[in-house]
Length: 254
Image (tube, rainbow, N blue to C red; front, side, top):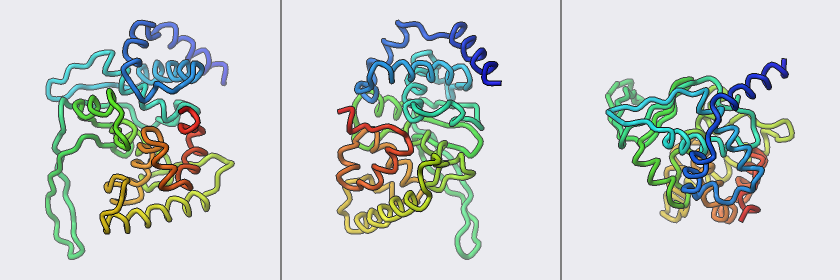
């Protein structure tokens, strides 16, 4: 049935194509995409078009959605799946955008079984089999200038890739040529080192990566695309695993 899927993609690209003006005017503002070659940019445009067609975008608290907003989010998200199929983002359908950071409330239970309500202000959140939620202010902050190791879109979409195995735990589905042992050894060792460095206040990597393995993976993905030199310098084995996973080499792009 591959021919049927190809026919469907062809129809979407014909009926819902992004115009040259829309595509180039938006993507030229995004430093994250500057180093891609022409074939990579063409592939990214195709994925972005399909992504915008397939996902529902919703504005919250009066946020006004535009095609530019959709392209900014979709193009940077699809950079992570540039060598994948769009099915890597299957299992959920909605992106919700707030104008600014949003507050969430969660019930937590301590070791004694006492339940309490915790309130947090977030810039982004990925729900298991649910929507992705973003603060537009934070997307703007990370998208239009290079910020070493900080990119909320990359971070939250990395969680979605991680969740393809059932839950966010720092172990996304690996390619057949990759081994779980090498992945686990590389990332676990780096995670433990980072936790110790954070305790001694000697970490150049964002301390949020030491929260848990899922956040470590998401933050490493941010560094892989926004500060590959620093990631390679600090954790070359992690860089190597992410290079194999994404099938991309940001260091080679310059």
